[in-house]
Length: 77
Image 1 (cartoon, rainbow, N blue to C red):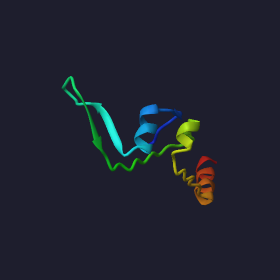
Image 2: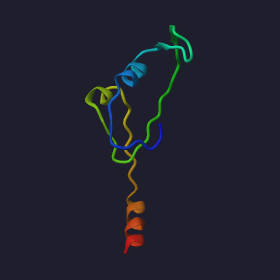
Image 3: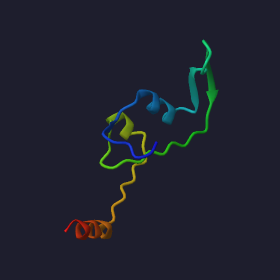
Image 4: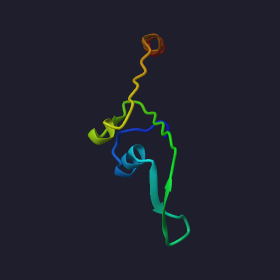
């Protein structure tokens, strides 16, 4: 998921992050299935907030470049 905005809160995503099994409906069919997955989920966003439950399941990395801020300020002036 790339460049999310606002607030991320998804019980289905939380379940996917913490379980090695996925269950859901098969697209185009009226039946459900359960299968093992090996997903790695990456989420990017600017000023994105996440729910407390999601926060416990994430490895949060905050990227900040002081030099980029200085360059942005010079472009605005």
